[in-house]
Length: 458
Image 1: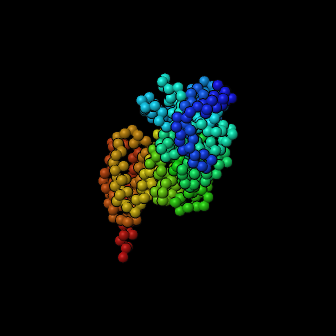
Image 2: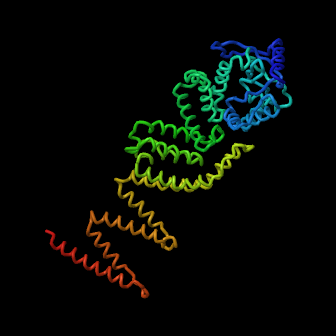
Image 3: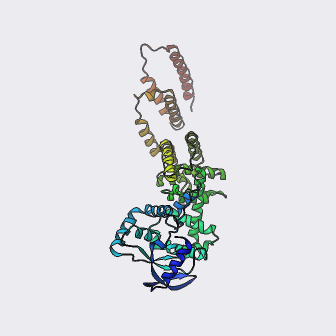
């Protein structure tokens, strides 16, 4: 049924007796409008319905045409509406089957559903219903798009309805309204929010778009699912750190460091890294996160880029012409996660330990106990323990502890040296005998010099 026919059919319905009325806000006035029974065949879905906006935008952003006047387009919209909240839709469908349609929808005079797309979809799935109860607006969508958008938004984003929406939809809805020239103040009024909240949502949406651009997923908003909290945190960090230096970041950081923070955060967002841990990257006061300590941040950053570079280099080129783009990109992200997750988690954990150690720098007992526990946990019989790089690290550790003792307690250092000499084991077949004798002579020489210094002390 084309537009002209739909208008004619709906004009005939307007001549019939209404089944009730309802007060709605139309053109800034509260007015009562009549409710009619409209055959479902006369109606078409709004493909930009706020409940599925991210889905239809994702499909259209890469060339898939969605015509709601075709059977294929109708079925696609119905699938998207159902999949947006399957459990909730199942319960509502059962409720409608037993009680009928309780809440009227709203349509334009050319049959486009402004409010009630989900209810109409469910009615289409129930054999005993062939009509939709709705108010019929006195205009087509083309005749007054902004007023209809205003009405649609106020209904869709009311407090009761928000619960049924994918969290990403409100950010995308705000962005779309802004692009259509609607002021932030009006968007706030339409959505029942404060102006500051809409401004925040627009900033978060910008971060989301930057993330999609980074992955070359431009416009595929389905890839934001399950990541809202991460984007909220990252948006806040960039707002705090970018531009003028703040004491919440390490001293002397630059905008390029904030750019690195955003890029690294994107990789952790991609694998859906645990949110509470994620916030340790840059959340709160300076001592509480990586970005607050120059040494920790640069170590974390450098290891991250070292780990991640080869993974991105080996990723397949993106096929944005895939028949099921969302499933394809989800699979691509899952493969990335399989390769990157352990590396990212290990790097994060190492620097969490460094951060905790830094926070405990004036509590030596706590740090030393922690070090003893870690050293004691090493399996000294393991083949890995015998590797040169491990023994070199043990030697470095010994040098550090010796230097610490030397400054505060020469007596303990000498006792430690004596204990070590007494515990040295020489095997019968030891080959480097000459080297050992050389070390012993050096020890004797240095011990004699030290003895003279001590005797000369006053």
